[in-house]
Amino acid sequence: MSATAGTLLLHEDLRDAVQYCREVTRARAANFYWGLRLTPEPQRSAMYAIYAWMREADDIVDGATAGSDVARSIQTFRAHTRLALRGEVAEPTSLWRALAAVARAYPLDASDFEAMIDGQIADLRPQRLQHEVELRQYCEQVASSVGRVCVRVWGYQSPDALALASERGVAFQMVNVIRDVAEDARMGRVYIPQERFDGAGIDVDGLLHWRDPPRCLALLEGMIESARDRFEASAPLESMIEPTCRPTLRGLTGMYRALLERMAADPERVVRQRVSVPTLQKALVILRARLAGGR
Image (cartoon, helix red, strand yellow):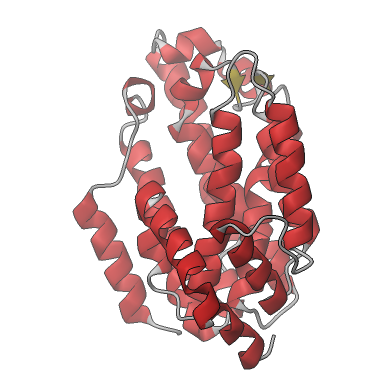
């Protein structure tokens, strides 16, 4: 990507579109927003546009109601996305104008966006994963794809960065799976594989009601350790990202690691309430990432 191509995103004609995407990110994803504040321009604005696109996809699925034609909405969204990734605008809205500009400026891969849309469609129906390989496939679909898009915008110095970004995405999504286990189960989605429940000797209802604490702990601690392993496996990624964008990756990773360790300190909390990282701790994570700079 040339410097000129990147700065096209900051053109006066796109200012309102980028501002819209920034506000969507700030309002809907505080953690992600503050992590992206560490990113230099024009990559920062590009990431706002990509997040706004992901939010729109989420909202189409989350807003589905009985009798709604969500399939048609997703089909239209997919068609508009394909056009935008070719640098064309199907509708002159802020979202599509911004995404088309990002596609003209950065080497995005359409397959990553297709995977994210497919993941949204999969969440429309109850999910009950049976095997570990299915969990891996789910994480790759909804999160590894995001990781690769981020790396393509940030810039990277080794072709291995894309594979490691996929691994980091798996780590992030495993944290989400652990945190959201109770909420997902209420919607008929169980992403912890059945073979893990069998290995721990409990069922989903037993976990949600914490009926056998040692077995419940064994299950969640196993998931937590698997997530840690994925973070460690992707550790070389930071050194492969362009130095100016390394603080962003460190900040986002630091917040996910902090969330994982809060759950590790008291695994039972995930079935009682939605676990989050306190504001002060998040601020410290971002500060450390900023101070570390591009090392």
